[in-house]
Length: 231
Image (cartoon, rainbow, N blue to C red; front, side, top):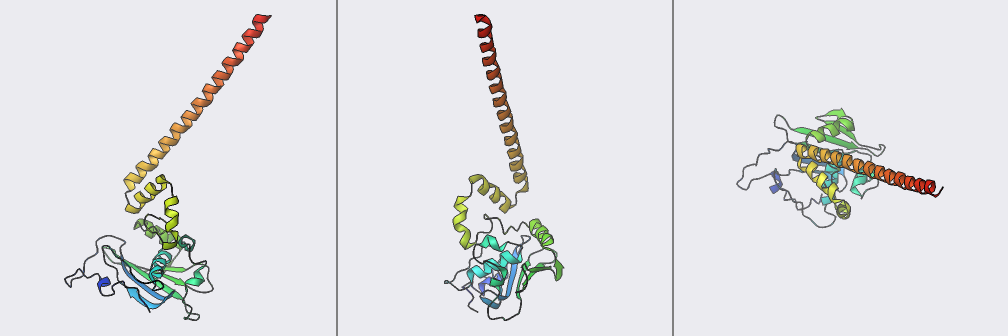
């Protein structure tokens, strides 16, 4: 397989001195294994715990890695804006074999392995956590706990969705950025502020309505007074 220049050896999380850099952040991607998935027949990649860059020419499989991460961790294929259905993610040369993606996530006690299996006769993947079959809801509860958000453009921005990012409202970008960094306290304050703002707008609307009602009643009273005076 034509693995992009992901620096296969450097991707073993080598700290530069021959020592493997330790992971510290819960939910960090330790390993990605793809079998019969898009351009890959069987490939394993070991990202490092810090900043990772995937470099390679067109068609070398960079987007395949991103897609594998998204699908395996519960992302919606529609959010990728590229493939129309899951069957298109299965390597054309694998016959009737399933496409399998495994993503190993760092956990201080014991790493968590999430596996997704795609078959040509199924409309959605089958998911497994540490070899136990799970529903998508259970998978999403895990990713939420680990603050992994495939649907958040501030955390996960596929190539074909880049042009949609500038179309987001500033408030949406701010909210998704807070979600991406995982500051739940600030997020709660943001929601609380939104509730207060909505309450203020409702009060202002009610005040405007009442002012209009008073103005209308005063005008009606003046008209009635004039009519009475003319008689």
